[in-house]
Each structure stands twice: as structure tokens, then as C-alpha cells.
Length: 472
Image (cartoon, rainbow, N blue to C red; front, side, top):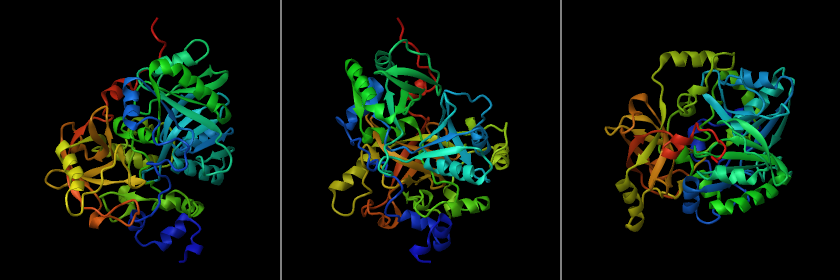
């Protein structure tokens, strides 16, 4: 089949005998998390070390306005649409609340996830998660739902400006910056609840949310008002040591926060999704997958993850009918699920990898700082010391707050206890794939120690705390 005939994801699958190899050698992925595409946010405002420290020691302002897609859903059947597709319960979901929303295929494997907010006027706002936004749009169009959707792609993907600005205010002094910036009394906001305040004369939606698990808020409003709100935050934040964070600091937060972004979507082989694959165009994110790392498996479905793998089983509620419910009930009854953990990479092995750059011959895979990202979806082998494969590790990065290299991994239950020693294979086989971003290199192994997820002590302590008024 010629490229001219490939109009859908299904056409691509029909023309591609080895999808894993195709994605493993893909020159470009759908989104570059190292450089955030055409985002006007610079890699660094000061330097990424100080910007990382700010989210632990003072306050950091991150601009999320450009790299995340959004979908706005309105209509009398919007709640039913989300309930029919999602593993989450909507029994108590009310305006000015948010949730991490997950959708699965008929076999119970994750298609995607996003943050879902319900605004005051009844609009559902999906933030990030292109895979799940595509899935919701398809079902809204193919099903009998009385809804309207508006897709708002990232900056650079469309000529129109973004609908909303979105800022993340992080760190132990974030509450003080927030209180000084708003007009009137500071509201009490529980985790993943929302409020409405005024900043610089503008109405602002506030979500109690933390990118790195710390006490923080996400602020959003009409795009045109973003500059005024940012100016006010920077003005009052100066007295609290507020820094702006660039894309390097933003994407290096994954190790401390413990988030696994965009695992392979479970859409490629489910018979019940045949029409969906025909609906997805050939330039969709699903058709432009990009795999990297040492874990090469025979079948794309072997890269799929379950809600348990991502720590989302706490959100799984069987109080409603939804796609994948039967399979997930069977999974729940079996137990023994893999678990999401943090891996702390061995210091001596890190030094050995970096030292290979100063020695004759082919070095090991370059370990970029603060985050080593050379594919959109990275899967590195995680094995026991005697070589038994027990899971995979995602992007690895350095955090100045812990003075460690950390990665987020999914491992078998019997290897998930903190303190367990495992081995990560670093680098791709056969000298590396054909991805231009991957240089010729040697593979090696890195010892790693299993640790809690999220890893940062501040993240663990602050994750479920409320953003409350400053004590008098």
C-alpha cells in the first residue's frame, strides 16, 4: 500500500507488518517533551537547577498555556458520555470539581487519561491527554449523545490563539504568593476542588492541584487575560522568591511527582475499536507513535498498561456501566497487579555512564540532564539481578532537590517493596534505532533501588493537604 492510500490508523496497521519496529524507528513523535514543540516558553528562565529548587524551597510559576490540548464538552448528555467511557464514578461530581479521568478499551487496558474539570456553567473541560480526547470525540459523534465539542489544540497546531491560559503555582510559598495576588479573602480549597477568585481585575478559575505533589494551585482563564494575571503574580511573588520555570524544569518534575505520561494507548488490536481505528486519521497521535528504550517486545499490545499499573485503581468504581467494566472486574478479582514505583539509579553506575564520554570508543547512551528523553514513549527493561524481566522504566531524570537520578517504573508486585534491588538496561539494542535523536551507543545496565511513588518527601506529605488560609 502506498503512503497516498494511508488515510487512517487502520490503513497504517494494514500496511505495517511490524508495528513495534515501525514506532521504534519513527523519526518524529507526536510531541517533543524535551522542547515542547513551538511553545514560546523558553527551556530556562534562569537555570533549571534553581527552577527545580524553587518548587521545593520557595515558589515556582510554570506556564502550561501552550503544550497541552484541551476539549470543551457541553450539552445535556455530557455527564452520560463521560460516565459511559470512564472508569471513574460521577455520582458526586459537581461544578467546580476536577478529577483524573481514565478510559479503557474492552479488555481493560488504558486508552488514555486527562484532567477533567466541571466549570460553573456546566462545561466539561478536558486538559491534556490527546488519546482520551480523541476517544471522547469519536464516541460523541458515533453515539446518541446530545453534546457539542470544541477542540483546542496546542500552540502552533492551529492558527487561532488558545482558548485559555493556564499557570501552575508551585512550592511551599505558593500559598503566600496566591494570597497576596488575589482580591479579597483567600478561599479554602481541598485537593482537586476548584474556586473562583479575582487577580488583577480578572476572574480566575483555581484548581488545587500539584504538578510535583506539593501545595500549589493551577490558575486558568481567557487567554487574553493571561499576561495581566502573570504580571500580577510576578509582582507579588518577588517578595517570596518566586521564579518562572522553563520547559526543562517542567518536564523534569516527573521523577519527583511520579507521573507516567502517555503510555502506549490500547487501541491497536481491540476488535471493538475497529471503527475507531478507521475514524482516526493517518496523522493522529495514535498513528505517529514513537517508542524508545531497551524494551523491545514482539507485539504492541504487550506495552499496554492497566489502571493498577498507573496507580489509578483507586479511581476505578464499578457503580456504573462503562467500556471495559467486565474485563476490569475480572482483573480486580485476580489480584497480583503490577505497581508503579520510583527507581533510584545507582550513583556509581551513573558515573560510569558519564565517564564513558571521556574514554576511547563508543560511549554508552548519553544521559541527558535534567531529563533524558529520546522518544515520546520510553520503555526500558527492568529485571531482577539474576535477569528475570519484571517491568519497565520510563523517562529518567536528575533532580537537584534529591541529588539523584530517578525514573518512574511499573514492576511486578513481588518487586515493588521499597529497598528491592533491580537492574535497568540503559540504551537501545544493536547500537540504537534509526531515530535521528538517538546517537550510536553501547547498551549497559544500571543498578537501581525501588522507592515509594511519589518519591519526594514534600510530595508525599503535601499530596492530600488542603490549600488553606495563611495563619494569622
